Length: 107
Image 1 (cartoon, rainbow, N blue to C red):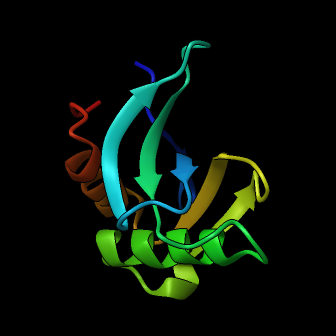
Image 2: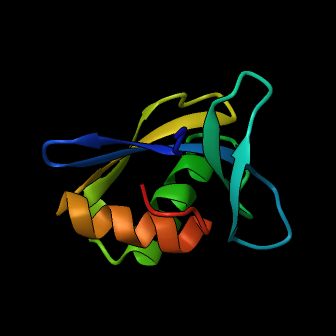
Image 3: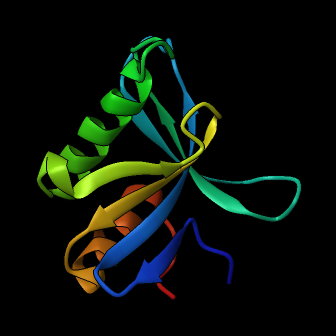
C-alpha cells in the first residue's frame, strides 16, 4: 500500500503537498498524485518567502503530531510544493498520529 510517509529508525519521513497563502492553517488529508505517490495535503497562511511557509508547516505539524518543534524539519523540497518532512520521535506513535490526521487505514 502506498502511504504518505516512510518509516525511519528514529521517526518518519512525511510527504506533504503544501499550499501557502491559504485562508487558514490546516491539514486536508491524503491525496494521491498522478504518478501514484501519496502525500498529506497541508495549507498555511504564511507566504512562500524566506522560508516562512516551511517554518509555518513545521510548527503546524509539530503541534498536530504532539512533538517538539525541533523534531520537525523540511529535509527535501524546500522551494517546491511537494516536501519531505523529517519527524523525529517514537516511530510507532508517529505512525498512529499521522494515520489519525490523514484518515489512512492502518498498514
